[in-house]
Image (cartoon, rainbow, N blue to C red):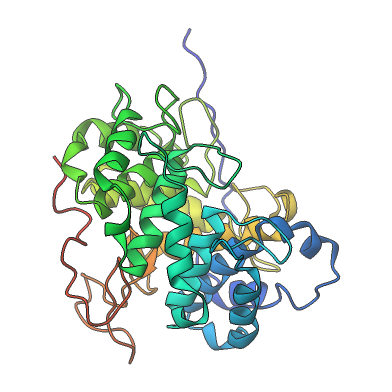
Length: 361
């Protein structure tokens, strides 16, 4: 007898439509009560929480509800003398939060608020001899940090400051026999790492190094009967992998290899129809995560994924998790703001080398 596949059951009365207003209120409430227990628990990843929250609000057309000046002042206070940016004031700088801060400032067109040259120097200083990147001065190596480094430098137009060839060599050394990628050479393939590595290879113009059919097969195998996606074999579906898997499939040009209708149903069923927000899977409660920032991430995952699944939100470019404002199915600008390049976010860029699906096998 074969091993039973782990999955969940979606109840007939589960939510089936997107409740944007409730989700917008849920995000807007974050940070309004800074003495709340949940808020203090999220301090160690505050910068990323702000980024995901702002992205959600922008996608839903509610960005003006957020305090722009307060957020920019917070980012400025989090930049250290070394150039790196921390998750919160008084914390150590890290590549993860440096990327989130730069993404926020690009969203607000306010890169001049920080010392960009110091940010670049900080990232350059974290590249190792083998081409990998440490996440911070303590030296942890992970392909996530390779993506963070390249994504940040791409946004700043400073990719030439690192050894790109060595960086690519390291990421390719983390490719496995199944077509996927792990955090380091020899590590198990995981959907989150695959997103980081395919995004990295797209940004560096090396996506042709990926076996798109082999990787696409591994990724589409992550979909279960419920329609949800897991991050690796023999795991339960989790709504966060709707982004990591779907974006990776989009990057390599294999997004049609999964059942989009079933995934939409799974995602919508994860909503909390009373207070807003998303649980990790249908039937769980929104508060089941460690802190509210995880739910903000889930909301961003959903509002980013649903445009890829052709539900009516702003279009997202999967390589950089940033807003394009133009849907290829609509073909028209969705707002008065100009179309932005998926890599540099600037309106003047013509997108050279930014097409995430142009060079996959």
